Image 1 (tube, rainbow, N blue to C red):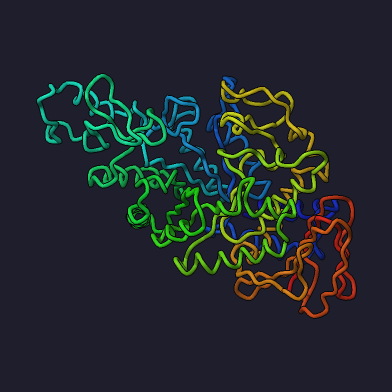
Image 2 (cartoon, rainbow, N blue to C red; image 1 turned 135 degrees about the horizontal axis):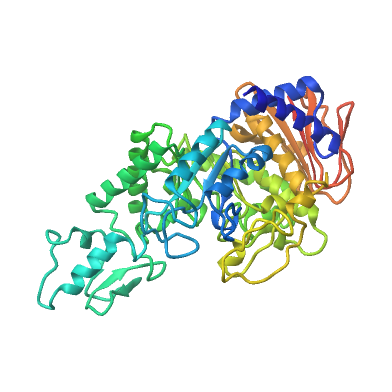
Length: 526
C-alpha cells in the first residue's frame, strides 16, 4: 500500500508539470491520493473493458491471452483503473466467444484456469477488481447440453414423443415442431430450436429450475475463484418482448449471486431506451449500461458536436439520476462512450479534432457511477464497420501488437501507438490518464448527486456541483470556441483543485475569476 501511495504522489507531481492537470500544492496531492485509495474498494469504480483476443500476446501466437493481461496490469493500474471487465473467456468456436461451450473452463487460446487464478492473485495485490462476461441468454450449439438434446431428438421416430425423463436437456432449450419467429431447424429432424441471435447460439430455457441451478453453480464457481461480479450479456433478450420476464429473471439472478457473495456486482447490457432501462432497475440489479449517453447517437457525442448544449448534458444527467433512483434507490449508473459493438470514437470526428476526442472521454469520466472505458479508447484507436474492426489489436507500438480477428479489414489508425503517445504530454493517452486520476481523486465525482448552477450556465459553458458526504466540488466545462471568463464570486470556493486542458492554453484562477480556454475543464472545491 505504501508503494502504491508513493507512486501515485509522484505521478500527480509529474502531471502538474505537464500542464494538462494541475493541483494546488503538495498537501492537496496528499489529500487527492488518500481519496483515490479510499475509493478503490467501492463499486463506484473506473473499469477497463478488455477483449483478450486483441489485447496483448504473451506467447507469440498472435492472440492475446491471460498472461498478456497480467503483463499489462502495471499499465492498467498506472492509468488509474480500479476494475477490469474481461469479455468472454470460456471455450468457444468463435473468435468473440459469446457462444459458450463450457462455463467452467478457459478457452485454450487464452490460457488455463491456473493462469486465471494467477491473474486474480495479481489483481488482488494491485487492488483491481475483475468482472467477467456471463452469457446466459444462449450457449453454443457445441455445448454438451445442446449436443445431447440434439442427439436425442434426432434419434426419435416421428411417432415418438420426447421425454425429459429420457433426456433432461431437451428442456434446457426451446424446441418445437413448428417453425416460429427466431427459430432454426435442428439438423435433418423435424424439430426447430429458438436462436434469436444466430443459429449457432441456441437460447436457453430460463424458466427451467434445472437451468437456474446450473447458473447458480456457475456463478458460485467463479465467485469462489475471486471474481468481483459479472457483466450480463443481452439482458433484454432473456425473454424476447417480455419486460416483466426480464425483470423477474434479473431479480432472481441478482438475489442468487448476492446470496453466494454479498458484494457480488452485476452490470447488465440493456441496449434500449431510458424507460426500459428504468424498468429493468426495478429488479434490484446494481448497474445497467447507460446507452442513452453512449455511442455515436448518444448524449455525450451530441454534446461534443454542440447539437445540444453542455448545460443540457448536465440537466439530462440530473433527470436520469432522479428517474433511475425512483426505481432502485441503490442503483449504480454504468456510463460508457463506446464498447465492442460500436464504432470507436476517434472515427466520429473528421480532421484535426483531438480536443473533441479528449473531451468526449472526459464527459464520460465525469459522470456518476461505475464508468467503463473500452481498451484503446485511451489512445484514440479507430475501428468501424464489421465487428472484427471494432475489436482491432491494442496499439502498443508499431511492432508489438496482436494479429487481431482474422476477418478484420486492413486500416490505418488515426493516432500514434502508445509508446509514442507516452512521450507527448498533450496526447490522448496522457489526457485520459489525467482525467481518470482526477476522477479517482474526488469521490464526489463518482458518487455525487448532481446539481446545475443555472444562473452561471448556458449551452456553451456549464457550472455544476456534485456532492458526496461532506465533499462538494464544482465542475466547469467550457465548449465555447474561445477563452471564457467566469465570475464565480457567488459560490463558496476554497481552491482550484484540478484542471483538464486539451491544449497548452492554461486555466487561470484569480480573485474569484476563472479564465478557461475552449474545451477546458476545471474542478474547484467548496
